[in-house]
Image (cartoon, rainbow, N blue to C red; front, top):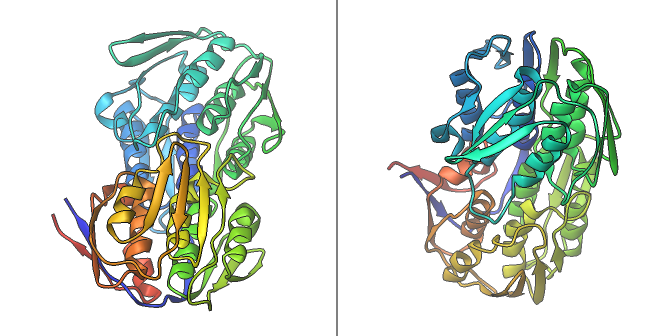
Length: 419
């Protein structure tokens, strides 16, 4: 199993380009199932999750081609198999995103109950209950979701809880449903807007994405499109946090700052100097230690849960005491035990972490438990004294494109160790 060896103490500086967003790309790849025509996706990040969903579509019979410009052409016109098998689904919860498109296009689907990061309950019942309201018949059998419908029917649906993938799944399913579908209590993340824009470019009729209510008027078919995957706001936020903990001075290019405003505000509160234009964010951290900042995670546009672990590190080396409240996932403090092994002073009580800042962290051997936990351990290693080894980095490869190469370009000293 590969590891990262990090020699801490270097100040990060320079410019770095943000990769395409995994959380936007995955539903867009699933959406290609809805069309009989070829879909071209550009700026896809090179990540394990992207490889996994391509393997999933390929196992169903989709044709996937990569051209010399690194653009992917996906043809899902003649899928021979509507089953998403467990061996592929078990590593990535986002595999559930093929359920809605398969059901809408082919009238049936068989999807293994998904796996992925162990950061808490992310119930698929929100997806299933909503699809039933569109007329689907759904059974759970031997670890699989078996769904069928002659023709999905539009309906007014209120989600029992805010769910990003549930919102995306129902948006895709409703594009080919008969009549109008109105979704309420929906997620408002930028990736929801991105998916709606892509589907509309294919001929869908979706309005309201990013607001409290999304309206989808069903159409007979969707057509060819070319779409550019937007930049990954969480990747950008992670590199900004890396600069904050190393007294760095960097610019992240290719990112819309409006998608990261809560993170930018908190970095300002921590003592960083932030400037931005419509397509980049710059950070300069001149203070010896950050100021402590309290954080409460919540769905967009509030502070993202996917940046909670990174801010744990910022607060861990701050000059005071801070509080982090995790309201999205109930099991997302697993990185805390590993950070404490590096000298952090963090106490967890339920969904509340109390962080007493310390002057220095110290290198240690640590183990990643999920994607964003991996990022926090790398950040801790960057600012720690001595050497840090981060094990189980397959998590980081699911969501960050060449993270050690990008950080080394900014002045870090990270080596990937072979298995």
